[in-house]
Length: 210
Image 1 (tube, one colour):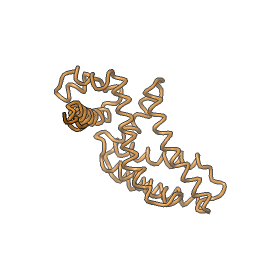
Image 2 (cartoon, rainbow, N blue to C red):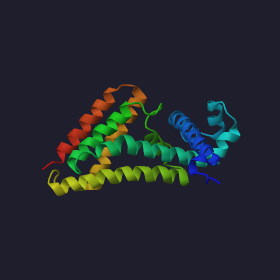
Image 3 (cartoon, one colour):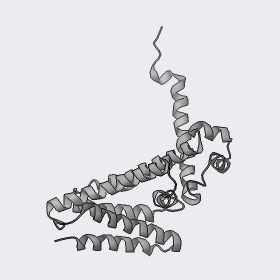
Image 4 (tube, rainbow, N blue to C red):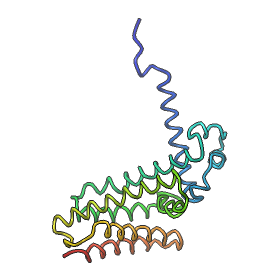
């Protein structure tokens, strides 16, 4: 008898289709959440937008909270793929901080999400709502702040930034520029917000140079 290979197992095909289905549903969920907020996102709302049975969406995520957490994790991965990973081609320290600022503004300017940066809006929406969803948002943004602070420290070590620079303080200020650019564009619809964001990022880094 010829042994069955892994690729001939019918469960492999079902698993692949299931993963693709989940990715497609999650993509719709991301866009809905960026407009309606994480609290406005529900199994029923998502199923209606997809034109599918509520049970189908429930089977993928299990609960509203499960859906919210999946959306946050997917958003985190998008930030890594579109902002953090491209900037790794620049040397650690000041060059990477400059690259991170450019990549972040490009990410915001590209309208990746219908309603603007989901992590930015979620941080405001969930800041007063204790629980796993808030914790997931906080953890994702803490990871971002840590990347900024790490590269500030590297820039200080290289002598590109003043020796008395507080890495966490500068990370705080850089993050505020991106958050402000996203807020300004979403509220006023003026893409000059990203030009101002780029300029603000550059000027801030120059101000910390020895």
